[in-house]
Length: 172
Image (cartoon, rainbow, N blue to C red; front, side, top):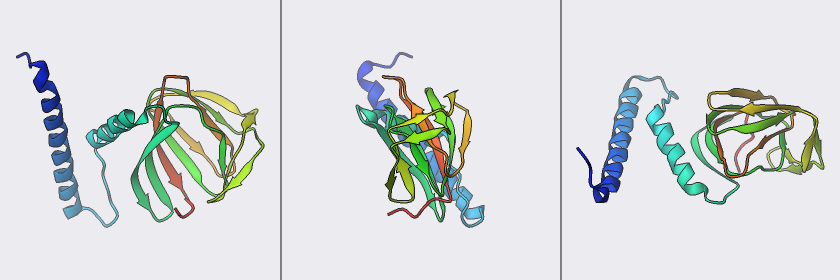
């Protein structure tokens, strides 16, 4: 059956609402039997959040959504639209899982012109040396504390990833 153009948007909204209701129902069922602290985010929820980030990006450097925030660790879905300055976390580890798009990961080496920031972080102007690898959906990267890192984004080709911050400094 061919759907008239004027109804496509309505059907999309109804479809997203149905996915949200299914996700809520699943979360409620999980909550009834799950141990304290257990959370399950289904793939439909992650895709819905990812689609929302793509709508919000515009010409921003990056946008993100907090998926979960816990004592000492957090989970974010991040969409980078452009390359940002390199960073280094003194106490936190980052674990990244590629979701959409590709980026060039630069890890290690020497960060040039480091500036200290809150939450025991540093930002620099560039990285000299370091390992350079293409990062794609499904790739898993662990960046230990004290290691400079940067994602190089190709113009017009955003990169999305799940970010797990471990031993995270308290949010302010």
